[in-house]
Picture: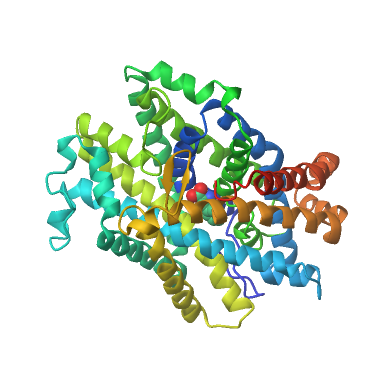
Amino acid sequence: MESPSNGRGQWGSRIGFIMAAAGSAIGLGNIWRFPYTTGQNGGGAFVLLYLLCTVFIGLAVMWAELAIGRAAQRSPVGAFKALAPGSAWKLVGYLGIITGIGILSYYGVVAGWTVGYLIYSASGSLDTVIPTIHLTDPAVHMESAHASNFFGAFVANSKLQILFLVVFMGLTMVVVLGGVRKGIERLTKILMPLLLVMLVGLIINGMLQPKAMAGLRFYLWPDFDKVTGMTFVYALGQAFFSLSLGMGAMLTYGSYMRKSDNLATSGIYVVIFDTVIALMAGFMIFPILGGAPTSAGPGLVFVVLTQQFQAMPAGNIVAIIFFSLLAIAALTSTVSLLEVVTSFLVDDLKMKRPGAVLLSGTGIALLGIPSALSLGGVKWLSNLYTLDGKGQGFLDLMNFIFGNVLLAVGALGICLFVVLRWKPKNAIEEIATGAPWFRKLRTVWVVALAVLCPLAVLGLLAYMAITGKALG
Ligand code: PHE
């Protein structure tokens, strides 16, 4: 980012914006959340719904967020205040801040796993690195082929879970605070293509597995018998989550764009990159599984991949590279989440940046503790309710409420704001300054914002209210 005379940062180039926005979008949502949610929701039909939601709703909301951000040149709450002074629309901004806090609190826990697995791959055992903290079963280590026991023991270890949550939140705070942001963004230019190459390698590895075809069938063949209202709830939520939409992250990134930037095409690029990476993650996992995953919920990717790494030549090196890349992909996402909260504290509550980062980072890390303890560490937190016969813990609940429902509600707020208050005409002019062709899309875009997105989100809420599946 450069610092022009208005004192706000600005992207140095269009590619700078695309890299940062893709950095926010691409993360655990693609590699961790997408495969296991696909697994839990019946495979191909879920993937199809997710793609439809991405193209027909996600992209429209992406443009809306970028346009609001660039027009207002402010972070979420400030943006709604600036474009609709004295109105209640700022609540959409506040909701975004709250949603961001909720998401980051449990996302930090899962991001911590990437660091744990990285240390583990590099050392062969977490016990050698952190000798005072033992996994419950000392016989469990990667070479024992008990990848799933290892995962279970790792996530049930309260001390380790809190330690890695704190480590990851610390890293995020350093990046948001330290102005090493630029460096990270430059780094993503090299690392994202590297991640892509790794995924290709791991997809080839998967395709060579004996049950690859059956796995592909589960992943790609839409079996509509398995579709319920909840499949749709999860697919829509996954589309928003993966694209970082519905809580103001893209709005904030849009606020650093220049008027001459082509916001329309940039948005398309981000959506394409993000979706391709998610689909690739599925191609990496399902051929190995050879069908629906039997047990692994949130552990799916970690378990399946460590098993694979263990079986391949130089697997430890591959594992080290993979988990480093995944950790950095997660970091560029946590940074965008913390940035939204921080910029709110700075812009609206007039805090100083270091204090704002310290307060929000520490607060969110504390809020993450119940999630960190909810994978076996503390029994009642790990088993709050049952879904499809499986116990769901605090992290699952947070993931559902903040990562699905509230993102969808936020996205609805953003759509309605553009349609009812800001007016599509103004939004279209904002986008068209850098992309005149966008005017041709006006009808389709407005239909998506005024009809498709509201119908989808209200349908989701109504379905949950009627079936009582609020805790689904
Ligand atoms: N899109 C990020 C991911 O897929 C997560 C995220 C959600 C980031 C919402 C910012 C806002 O990992």
